[in-house]
Length: 165
Length: 423
Image 1 (tube, each protein chain N blue to C red):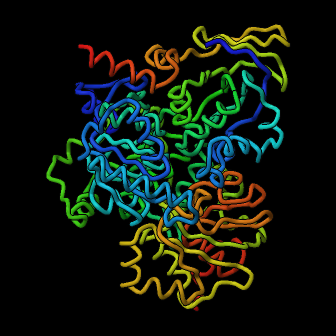
Image 2: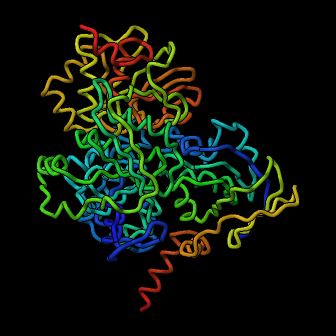
Image 3: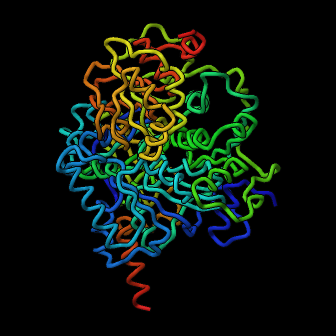
């Protein structure tokens, strides 16, 4: 579940309309993903590589319930999301889709910094700065969901258990 | 021990005596709503893969509203898939008759004390009926369809009390824009409980606007405890409530995170500047902002009462040259009512273009999206960058009074200027 990549840093209240623009919502996810965040960072979708990490301010993912906002990021290979706070529905969607999302108010990082994320321990290391930051842990009750890769795999296992008994 | 309304409903849905704010619980769902965008197109294949069926089709309502009417083949395919799934699964499907949050209320689906989830962020609208209704994404909806349950963190309750009465030309929308600016948009894990004389005086439609835009506060939901007005609306919907309304009230001494008091008498019409509902200021403080498009639409701003507000301003007036006014009523039933009571005549004589019922341009999916460099003044709930079309467009938000007045003047103005003038 650990992730290591470069930091892409954003401000407060990055909303679902810039993450998953409505204009591309009816088409394939790859097309939508290529427009992810372009309204505030036209280079992002081209530059981001698998394992890279998003670092943001408060209420990341505010707005719509569309989980394509998370899916666009995972399609581009984003490995983890670190923010001062997350919008409620977006946070659920991230964990449900197996995307580690950690609340990390103290975190310091600049664009391109080398970041390691250990979701289960609630630890983020900025290797560029040589500093370790402690995040709020994902609640025990929900860590199960993230550990198996999201709510669908979690549900599959639950149903299999129920069918077995 | 005393409990807030949200806590009472959640405790009941968990078969518990009481729940505490902050704890994570699993609740049984009384009603699940989803629409064409987040519904079957995203859940059908997952259900198939799981080999699972809907736990109780009588508790599920599906509404096609986002891609209605289809503007391209992709949209048409999504709508066709939605219809096929509805038939096969046996859930109630409202196909192109209005926006989900409005359709639910028109048919009396949301009722006091219910624990409801909706696959749309504006699902808190249902809170106007004294229910707990929260928005979630499609994966949560899929799991809920299978299990009939969902996890949630019990929210803190924040009380927002509006005393007095709203003045002429001021509406629930102005209250919410003001609150977005005052309380901010980061009120996660909170249930906003609206009360006070001004709220009790409101129609259900206006209360729905309050609860709807709790989403913009970042809250889990908004709620107004049920009273005679709510019961009357359920009667009109043909599904009177026979339960115990007294059971679904907040205890006055229940602990809450904060309690805010505002005076409705002094509230001015508010306008939110791009690109956030929290950028709200009194309409009177805006200089000359020219409007290319005025848009009256969405669950937040095109219900019958919203159309009435617009008509009050537009009666005997014309849309300004160089400005276009688009109106997309929130449901076919409301369109019919507006046709019968003369509202549509006033709107169309003023020069408004009538658009189909549906979510339309609000989410950048339907007719009425805007070009780079254009300015739109809209009754919708959100004005995030690029939401209504080009990321280089600028969207302002206001009440139906303010948007209608803006259409007449061709620029942002305080609608009370027009309401006070003789035509």
